[in-house]
Amino acid sequence: MSLAYDYLIFVAGIICGIILFQSSIIAPTVFRVLDLEDAGAFLRNVFPRFFMLIMACSLLMLVLVVLSDSSDKSRFMLPVANLVFSGVSYLVIPATNRAKDDGEEKKFKALHSLTVALTLLMLILNISWWLF
Image (cartoon, rainbow, N blue to C red; front, side):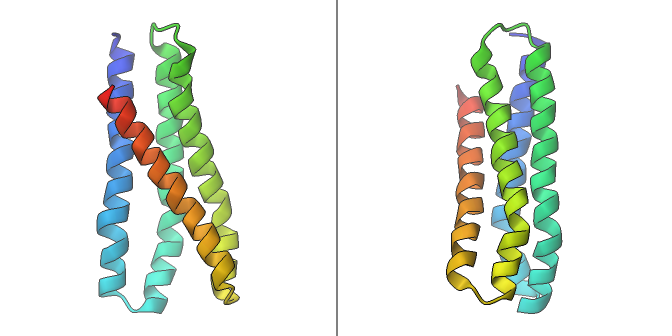
């Protein structure tokens, strides 16, 4: 294994930490501490940054894969999956906000569920990468 590969595992762990911290600490605390309107405004500012941070870490992972001395092309799958999943989630945010604002609960739930599922999938993939 190379030093770049060691850092790759480290960055996968950072992504897991970001997801766990946001999902288990930040979001629930916001709804407990702030009123609904302020919580919504806060989360509308935090979630785009959350997905951008994951995209930045994923780009770093991609660079580390290129720098690693492995010829295994499957190593590109995790950073690319992270980029696609976080990118889709980031791009869905405006439509999710619009659906919430317009009272389209069914559409809001579907879009929100999509971002939750993609985030959960990223968490599982990064944990799997780190463990194996």
